[in-house]
Image 1 (tube, one colour):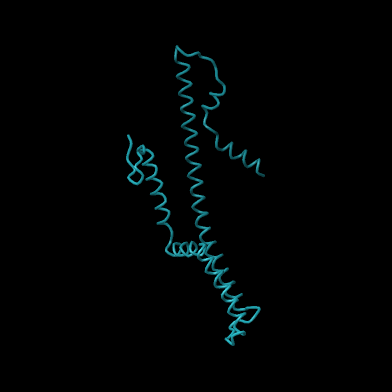
Image 2 (cartoon, one colour):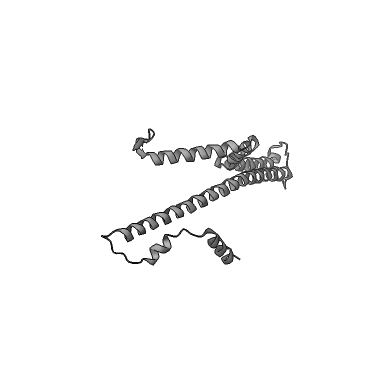
Length: 177
């Protein structure tokens, strides 16, 4: 059975539509878990990482340098004489704010990535078990069917066994030491 996707006019199988809904709900739950402070920091971080913010910073610095370098030529006040200590302070404060907001956002994204990796692992293990069961069932059908040759298939027998997760993890640990 297919359902329509009103935004694109394409028909999607109901399972795909359900999966998209499940993923959307999962993403929404993750957003709801974010504290108000995290949401504010993430919005600030997104702004601080934008091309427009970079352009404003470059224009500000060039304007600051131009003003302070040309002010004596027009007998105007020069608020920050070379080597531009005030400008250095502003740039340092800007760098501190940017790096802090980026780190806060990255910490949250790292936790979310860890959770997603755990979900991927669980789904992979479940898929392995299902695939092994399907192979075992096909082998049973092959053995029981009078129309098919009943010959041993060592590869199919091996694939019919689900992966021993503990052994695989131990082998990974041994290889990565």
